Each structure stands twice: as C-alpha cells, then as structure tokens.
Amino acid sequence: MTRPSAWVNDGNAALLTDLYELTMVQAYWHEGMDGDAVFSLYFRTLPPGRSYALACGLEDALRFLENLQFSQEALAYLADQGQFTAEFLDWLGTMRFDGDVFALPEGTPVFPEEPLLEVVAPVPVAQLAESFIMNQVHLQTVLASKASRVVQAAEGRAVIDFGLRRMHGTDAAMKGARAYHVAGLAATSNVLAGQVYGVPITGTMAHSYIQSHDDEAEAFRSFTELYPETVLLVDTYDTLEGVHKVVELARELGDRFQVRGIRLDSGDVGELAKQSRKILDAAGLGEVRIFASGGLDEYGVAELVAAGAPIDGFGVGTHMGTSRDAPSLDMVYKLTTYAGEGRLKLSPGKRILPGRKQVWRIEEEGVAVRDVIARADDAEDFTPQGGRPLLQQVMSGGRRTGADGGADPRAVLDRARDTARAELARLPERVRSLEDADPPYPVEVSEGLTRLRHDVIERLEEVPSV
Image (tube, rainbow, N blue to C red; front, side, top):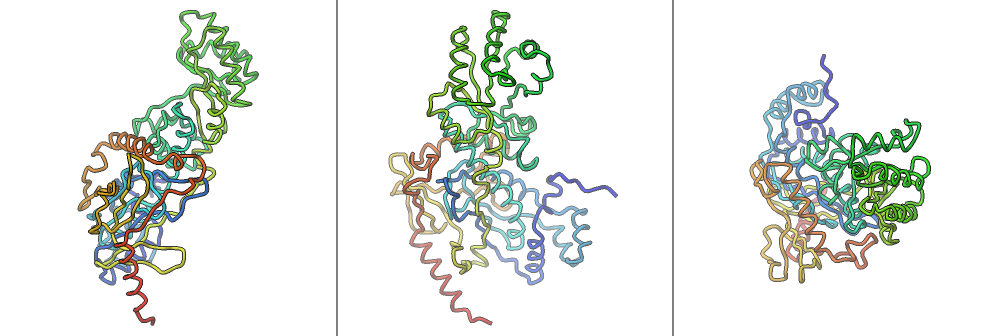
C-alpha cells in the first residue's frame, strides 16, 4: 500500500481540517440545511505591544477554495472511519466551492473585530473552509505583522530573513518568507521560497566554513576567489582581527577586491560596528558595508539604529520566524448569517457582529484617523467623511474576480507588498510605533450594524428554551 504523502498539496488539502468540521457538514447535509451562510474571519484583540496587524495569507486561502475537492483516496480514508454514510461521501465527492469571498487586500493594516475576509456559500461548504483558511491566514498575518515591525525599526536599512532553520516546520518557513516579502523585507535565505515566490535570495557563509580552514585569512581568500562580491563573516575568532584580515585581503587583491561587506554575528554588535567602520574607512574601504545578525528582533534593531551604529542591513531569524513575543492572534471564523438572517452567540466577551460587513477607513489629509465596521448593504455612506471601503470581492461563484491582483501569484505578491508600503504610511505615527499606541487606533461599529445586532439579540432572547 502506498503511504499517503506527508506534504500538504492541492490533492490532499481538503483533509487538512478538524474532524468536527466534517461531522458538522454531514449533519447539515443530513438535515437538508444548504442555505447560504456568511462566515467572518477576524481576531478579537491585539497582543500586548501591538497596535495593528498586517493582513496576509489571502492568496493561499483562495487557492484552497479554487481547488477544494476530495480525492477517491481521501473518501476511502473517511469511509474507513465509520462515522460517515456512503450517501454523504458520494455528495462530498462532488462538492466544490462555488461561493463568494470578500476580503481585505493583503498588506492592509487591520484591527480587532474587522473581517480579514468573509465567505458566502452554502453552509456546509462555507463551514468546511474554516480550518484551512484560519491556519493560513493566521500564520501569515502573525508573521507579516512581526516582520513589519522589524522593517519599521530598520528605518530604510535592508532586512533579510534568516529564520528557516528554527521556524515551526516547512510550511511556516515557506509562508513566512512570503509574508516577509509583503511586509517589506529585502530578501530571504530560503532558496525554495525564492523559486516558488520569486523573492530575492541571499546568503554567504557560516562559521563552519571558517572553522574548517586552518587559517581565517585563507578561508577569506578561498571564498572570495569563488564569490568575489561576497559578504565575509568576521567574528569566528576575534572580530576586529577578522576585519583587519579583510583589509589585508583588499591590499593583496588590489583592483580585484570586490567584497561587498562584512557580517557581525555576536558580541556588542553596535560597538563592534563602529570600530569596524573606522578600520575599513582608514583603509579606504568605505564602500564595504556592515551587516549585523544574531538574536535580533525589532527592539534590538531599533536600539542599534538609535545608537547610530553604522550598520547597513540586518539578518533577522528566530525572533521574527516564530514571532516569539506574540506568536498568535485570537483569530476566529464565525457564522454571522444563515438563510438570510443575522446570527450570533451571546457568550460574554465573545461579541459577534452579524451579517456581511464592510470596513470603512476614514482619513484626513492622507492619514487614517478611524475605522468604521458597517453592514455591507448599509445605506450609510462614509465617503463624504473621507472614508474608503476596504473589503473587496475577490471570488464570485467560486472564481477569482482579479481584485487581488490577477492570476499570477508573483504579481499578486508584489501588489500586496506595494499595498503594505502605502497603507502603513497612512497610519498615524503612534500606531506604527513599537510601543502600544496611546490612544489606540479607534474602530467603531456603525449605527446600522449596531441596530442589526440588537435586533438579532432580541430575536434570540424571544426564542423559548426547550
């Protein structure tokens, strides 16, 4: 018997779901419940130290919906579980996503309770989308949000993704590199991500290469013979002595010296950068740049920038790759409409805004001042107040509308990067800060949506308990 693939792909992604999604879908099917539903994906709160999140992951959500189907192998596996009838599995084998999706463009700053996307489809199909969509949008939004902060802290200096080896699995490493590109990183060390997404790749050497040679200077010499425009790692033994050896190499090679930079990976990087810069400049090597890495996050980068360290770029790995200080959002995928009626739950602290919605961003002189969450078909028009609607229809009848940038995933990714750059620039400075915004960015609920929620609550409270 052929062992099923352990790698998620278009052919098996339908099974990447929680079991209760499938048991609910069979119950919907058994009861004949196939009315249209609206499910809204959002998070309730921001982690401490965060004032915004950066929406990301829509492309993978749409790809999943486009290709959603159960293979014969998947159906046979479900049949073996003993929980699903043959008739239901026959229906499941023909099921496809033919609904609509409304979403924030990737790269849009987003705030609590604002839908990142809303799925409109028959309730069994919309329910089945939950686990995969949450998995992809949550991960990429968390990582793009962290990376955005690192880019902000670098104040125009290049930031490189070094996170592959310590990230939480292969999919996280791939989707992280994608999210980082949206957030504004210059490149990644992840070669497969470069091939798949078309993002720039970069990398030079590890300490093991230096260690494997008997002489550090010989290691530098040999590497530059093969890669003349490399960046040399100088802190394997004595950092400043390593810089002096780079100077010696430059004198030896003369006009053939093309080394682009040195990398500092340990110690007091700020002070070492200042001393290294003096050594390089004194030798007439002002064009040789200084690159820093080693345990950095946005706070470490900001501290180095504020101290005036002459660092031209940063390699950031584990802290960004795991979003160590804020590794998750309380993201949820909630039913807000079924069969034409608003739906919610009354659990304390878990408010649901019923119906399909629109998010309006109100701006004054090009700066965002507040958001309003409104009903999608609300008569209220926030355009005269400087508002613009953020949610766009990205799928209609199971097909992409092209609103997300077209069929080319690389073009979609570049568009998302441009969106992030433009939209972040529109946020107030206090919201882009590394500290909690004071006051927080305001998000309001429109009068129309507030009335609808009250109407739904009254209807639910009138239903007699059994």
